[in-house]
Amino acid sequence: MRRCPYCKVEISGDLTKCPLCQSKLTGNGEAACYPKFEAQKKQSLYYKMQLAIVWGLLIVGIGLDFLVRLRLPGFPDLHWSLISGMWLIGFEFGIMRQFKPGTGSAGKVTMMALITIVMWCVTAYFFGLMKITVNLVVPIALAATVTANFVLALLDKNGNTMAYLLSAMFMGIVPGIISFFVSEKMPIAWAICLMVSVILFAGAVIFRGRAVAAELQRRFHV
Image 1: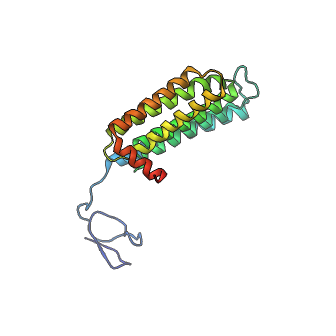
Image 2 (image 1 turned 135 degrees about the horizontal axis):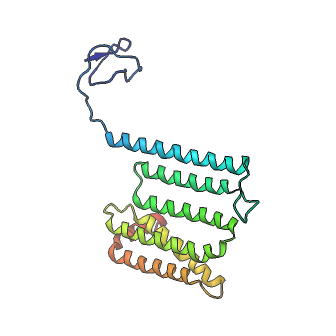
Image 3 (image 1 turned 45 degrees about the horizontal axis):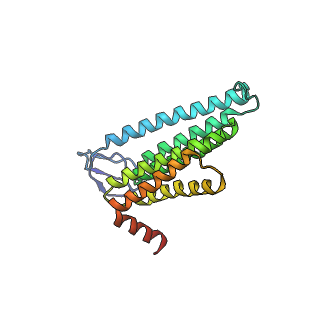
């Protein structure tokens, strides 16, 4: 058993430094008291590798844009490195959410969908694609998010997914209703998104009625 010469305590296991003062221990070590988590070490290594790649791409992009003044054909005044940097940071945030403990699959799906929608809208604004984005890309992404959360809600036994499912449905239903009253003709993608949201809400009530009622009561105090 090893011993700390400063704290005057004996430390079991294979530690080399005192957990109290971080001083070097003396004596002979023993077998490890706790198992080593090799999977976590591999995940940490993979995370550091992809983080280095992301930062490298970000720096190279900014250098080519602002130092070399490399421009995209047809967009001479557009600083494309800022847009690509936004996507890289969004990707990095998504990776961080994957490694973050205690975050459910529904939360990760919903958060990444919202971040992707926002980044795509910003990108579309600078490339002149806002109309097709608002009328096609956004409703498709919302419908896909609602569908994914519905499947996760059916698989979830703890009821942690219902809040994200109802939130995604709200995001799919409200913009569709606004589009119906604002425009003379609702885009087909928004109509599909609205119908998918209503159908899956009915399905959630049928298959998870108690969970839906409990979540609504908890959120709205009804």
